[in-house]
Amino acid sequence: MGEAGVTLLLGLAGIALALVLLLRGPRTLGDPRAQLRAVRRARIEARPILNRSELIRLAWLEAWARGRACRVFAQVPYGEMMRTRDEAAFRSVNAKRADFLITDKGGYPLAAVEYQGEGHWEGDARARDRVKRAALQGAGIALVELFPDEDRKAALGKVEAALKGRL
Figure 1: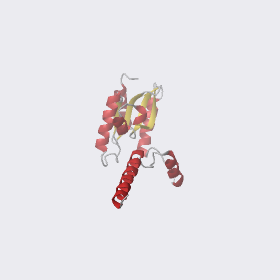
Figure 2: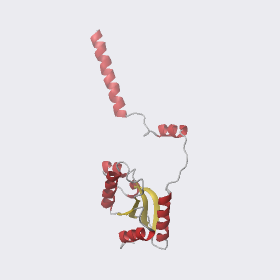
Figure 3: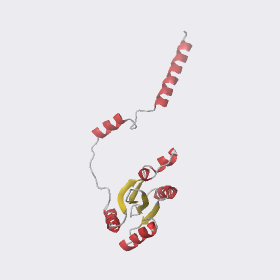
Figure 4: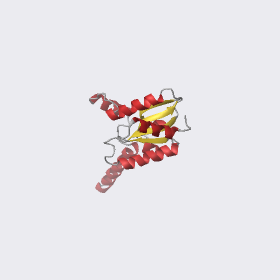
């Protein structure tokens, strides 16, 4: 085999290797062993899941829910409260979280409560909110948006209006 043949053979071997790596995909954090290595070498610490304003709203919702046929949860992933067979749609909502979720006693989602606090409007918040709204509407889950200037009575009035006839 001449020099041109060796060069062609090496070129084809390189292309074949590149295709194998492309099809196999890189060893990323999709691999549980890579995840374990990353977690073991990182410094990880617990932190509160709600800020002070959110804790206040959670207390309002929990007090309101006492004696009613519902439950209140905090920081619920959208991927846990809804499902779809459409992969792109699922990936679009899976990592998003509702600040609070009101369910019936059996855990069926009735309303997502989003607290639009002071820092909410940073970056692409409006676009993310449109995605959340569309997903909730598609799943038949009510959306309640609470704002910093609303007092307890106004906030809970919105919750009651959204759940009218559903509890």
